Amino acid sequence: MSIFKGAATALVTPFIDDKVDYKSLETLIDRQLKGNIDALVINGTTGEPTTMTHYERTAVASAVIEHVAKRVPVILGAGSNNTYTAIEYAKENASLGADAILTVTPYYNKCTQSGLVAHYKAIADAVDLPIIMYNVPGRTGVNIAPETCLKLAGYRGIQAIKEASGNLNQFMALNRLVGGKLDIYSGDDGLVYPLLTLGAIGVISVASNVCPEYMHDMVYKYFEGDHKRSLEMQQKIEPLVSALFTEVNPIPVKCALKLMGVIPDDYMRLPLTRSEKADLIRTALNDFGIATEA
Image 1 (cartoon, rainbow, N blue to C red):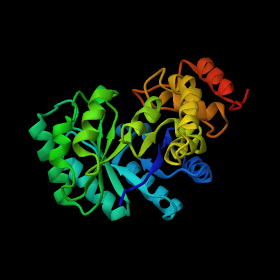
Image 2: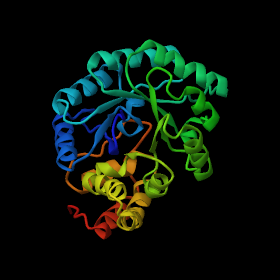
Image 3: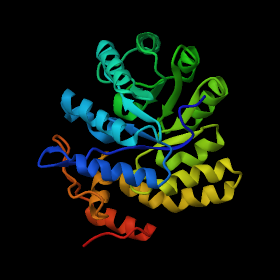
Image 4: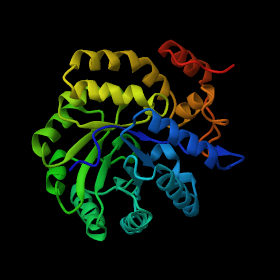
C-alpha cells in the first residue's frame, strides 16, 4: 500500500522573533487540509531543519502530528550525512507517531553507490516505518542511480523515492527498473505532469504551500484520465513555479505566503535571508490569480 497518492506538501516552518510560530503553523496545516492535500512532509528542506535545534525539530513534528490527528499521512524528514544520526532521527520520528520518513542521500562527504545501499539498508534495519528515499543531487552532490534503487526496492520499509534530479532519462530508466516495486514521487513542481506520464504516483511539492488544492487537482485530473486538463494546469502554473525557485528554496515560497497574508513574517534563519525578489513573486502570484496584500 502506498504511503500516499497525489500531492504532498513540503511544509514551511514559520518563525516570528526568531522562534517557531506555532499559531501560524496550525493555520498552515488547516489551510492544507482544507485544500485536500494528500500528505504533509515536515522537517524536509522546505521546513529549514538544518537551522533548527534538535528540540525545535522534535517539537514541530509533535505539534503537526497532534494537530493533523491522522487526517492525512505525516512524513517526517530524517536525513543526515551521518548514517548513525539518520538512524537516531528515524527512531525518534517513529516514536513520535510519523506515518513515514523522508531521508535524503548523504551530502558533503558523499559516498559511492555501494555506500548508498548500505546507508539506506542500515536505516531500514533500525525502524519499522515506511521510508521514502530522497534523490536531489543538485543539493547533495550525490545521485541515486536507477540500478541502486533496484537493489533497495522493497527492502524492509524502503517503499518509495522522491526523485528530484530533473533528469527525464534517469526517470524513465528508474521506472523501467523499479516500477511496481518502488513508488516514485516527483520532487520537481515543474515536472509533475511529465513524470506522471512516466509512472510517478504523485509529487512532494513546494508550490502546494501556496496552492494545495490546485496541485492536488492537477495530479488527480491525470489519475482520472483527463490528461489534457492536467497538462493545461501544469502549463498554467509554470510561471509561478519558476518564481518560487528564483532564489534557493524556501526563500521565495515563504515570501509568497507572507505576500498572501497567510503568515505574518517570512523570517529566515541564517544563512538564509529574506527574498530579494518580492516584486517578481507578487507579480507571479497575481498573474496566477492569487491576491496579495499591499
